[in-house]
Each structure stands twice: as C-alpha cells, then as structure tokens.
Amino acid sequence: MSSPPQAGANDRSAATPPPLTAAATAGSRVPQARIVTRIPAACLETARKGDEVFALLSSNVRVNDRRLAEALKAYTLASG
Image 1 (cartoon, rainbow, N blue to C red):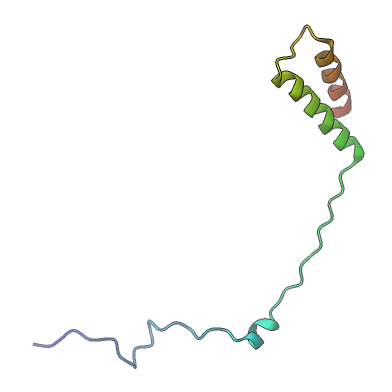
Image 2: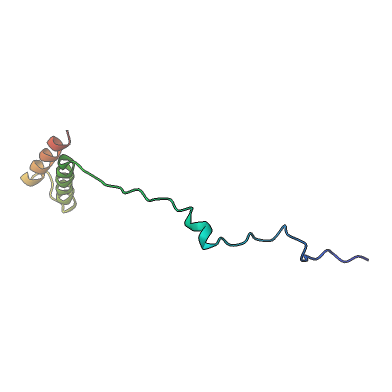
C-alpha cells in the first residue's frame, strides 16, 4: 500500500508570498486629498429652523401654540 502524499519542501502551491519590505512599501504611498466642506449660510439657517420645528413637535407643542406655527412658517420659507 502506498501512503498519501505529504507536503514537503518542494510543495510551493500552499506557500504564502514573502512579506513586503519597508523599501517596497515606501514608494507606493498615495498622497491624501484634502477635503474642504463649505455649506451655504442659507442651508445652515434652514437646518436650524427645521431643528426648531422638530424640537417643538417632539415636546408635544401642537397646533394651538403659536410657536409651532411661526417656526413651521419660517422653515417653509427658508427651504423654498
């Protein structure tokens, strides 16, 4: 009977590639782009007004309160 083949020194199919050296990785660096975000003031104001409407609604300020009507009107005008 023959025994099953064993992995030996000549079996390179399962071998992992050698690790990269510092010299090999130093040349492959990609410069990072600088990201600058600019948001128009009108967009920020609209977001603030929307936050105010949401705060009034979540604190159970409803139709009979003028604060909600005024905040909703200001948000609607700002977002248009």
